[in-house]
Length: 164
Length: 164
Image: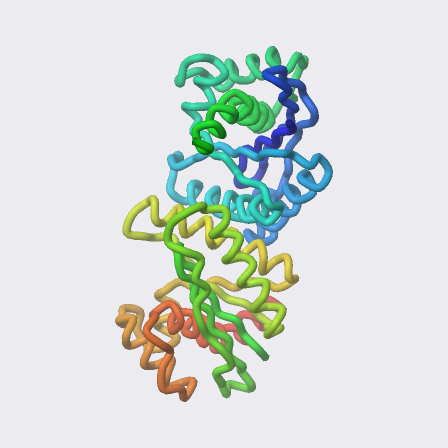
């Protein structure tokens, strides 16, 4: 199974694609969609949505997951981020894929074992679990891989739970 | 010129289409995209985006405008609404159209002459200016027509200002 994890951001949206085969995880691809920090919001939203559409077309993920963010340093940032998430979630649905959401707490617990781990701890765990040396400078990329790994762990249980 | 006004909402998104010809306004169409109040957020976002895409295909508006909302009764509602706006704005940009935003204050001033008008006052002014008897029960529809009328008034000045 191929899993696409997305970490939406107002200027950079991280993505991470992994394969999960009976608990064995492997890195497929990862990177960042850079939609620009300033300028026209609709154009930035469309670039994020187009980027996700292209990733789905290229990698044909079986499942998609995203970090759920309902808290933020300030209201304006939270609202801009919600716009980006809205454009991306609509695009994932349009591709006929469900989009599972996980909180930062759930992701950290799944990877590091406790919910208050630092982002750097999450990153080093991502590298260890996927047997890669680096996820680049951007924490958006390791965050996106982290949500994909979290889903690889939680997904099977969630599916059993939903089916019965 | 044909103008599409949109009033995004978490369960109902109002739309209003008018023509504006040298200051003379005429009603073209209006209604509500009902995406459901509960259930899967990505599917609701996609339905809103698809609805806007279909309206653009059917009516080929020259310009699109939307109410800017950065305040709300509670944070959760504001964030859900921002998701809907994000899905819609991305779709408008994808159609190659700019999306002008107006605050509620600007819309009320343009229609009623003062920024603290009640929604019902805005509605009756919409009906008078467009020479229609009703905009239906939903205030979302009259709000969408109101932003279109506001843009019909403000748009030419804004274009001159941007061009020089």
